[in-house]
Amino acid sequence: MILLKLFLSFFKIGAFTFGGGYAMIPLIQKEVITNQQWLTTREFIDIIAVAEMTPGPIAINSATFLGYKVSGVFGSVVATLGVVLPSFIVIGIIFYFLSKFRESSNVEQAFKGIRPVVLGLIATAAIEVGKDAIIDFKSIIIAGIVFYLVSVKEKSPIVGIAVAGIMGIIFY
Image 1 (cartoon, one colour):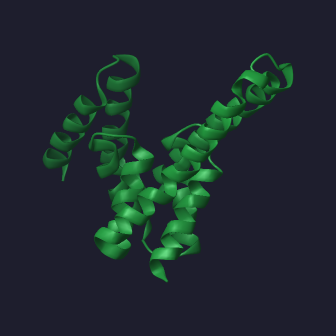
Image 2: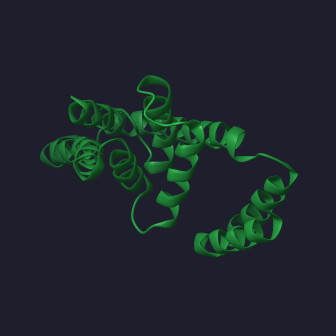
């Protein structure tokens, strides 16, 4: 029963999220913390941090880690399949019909309308995770420095993670 719930939860997340892994974070958060109560917010933040640090797309990494946390190896396989299967289905359908809709102004307009939603979902994820990740003034400093390094100085996120880890050791 838990494996079916994992699959359906992550299938739903994969099916109704546009914009990639970061846009999935608020949906994953709501599903695994609020709806299913599989994780605490702190556990969720830790898993997102690990998913960000490991190679591969954050949505797949998150599903894999969350599935493992909930139900071991089989849980990780089921959650990962659940989150990627909708994309495979949609890509297959799009590929099949692409030639018919390539020049459609309606399709182009629909995608222009969807783009701002992606930004809103990513902003929501940042705010929701930030509420629990920012625990004191030291964490604000770490977040600010990493934001500056990655966005302004255009350093690799790996550099940001390394700097944050070193600062965590020093500050805490």
